[in-house]
Image 1 (tube, rainbow, N blue to C red):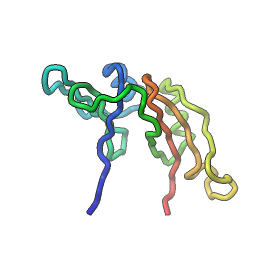
Image 2 (cartoon, rainbow, N blue to C red):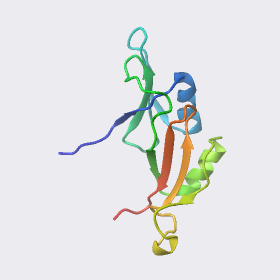
Image 3 (cartoon, helix red, strand yellow):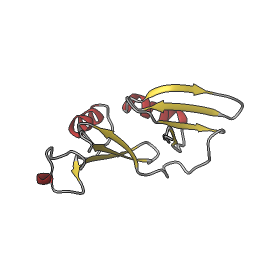
Image 4 (cartoon, helix red, strand yellow):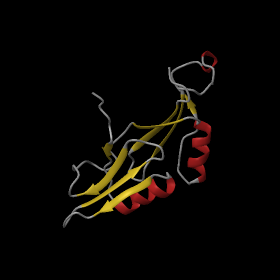
Amino acid sequence: MNWTLEVVIVPVSDIDRAKDFYSRKLGFVIDHDVVPGEGMRIVQLTPPGSGCSIVIGEGAVPKMVPGSLQGLQLVVPDIRKAHAELVSRGVEVSDVQILGANPADVADPLDNIGFVFFADPDGNGWTVQQISTRS
């Protein structure tokens, strides 16, 4: 049996500000923005190429402290290109960092060990990792 992770709830304080950040600055696709009832709103966004979406909203999502979600991770084949794209979109992102290994020990000095970090407007923390080959 396959088990797939398909949705992660991201706690935000301002749905429209977060929707703008994730869609405009990160390039996530807006899957839907619905109001299923009074006091409820669900916005689902998906990173390009991902099988997993995020949901922001109110009323029909669990109450969580905005900014409390840390360690969400995106994977890209080229961390330098991802970094450049984030910078060009106006995202405050860390420099490329090498974590967990000696770059001399891997064929591509950033494969599996190249990372950048950023946060959304509420402080939810994201990591982007380069994985261009998988064993």
